Length: 41
Image 1 (tube, helix red, strand yellow):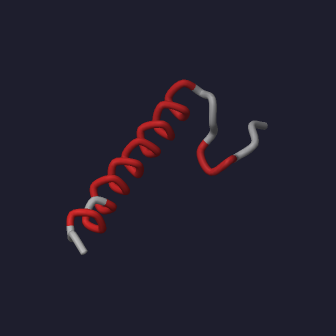
Image 2 (spheres, rainbow, N blue to C red; image 1 turned 90 degrees about the horizontal axis):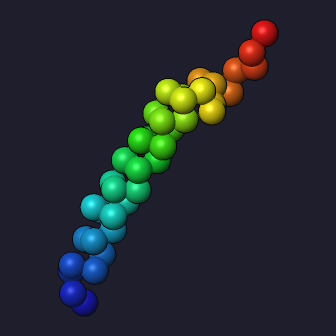
């Protein structure tokens, strides 16, 4: 089995994690989402 196939999952997974982190930060910065799903008073 060629090892680049299973090893490709590491950078792809890390890239998806970073993409989700950026999306969460943008949602917090623009006010779309609140931290920890807290309800506003």
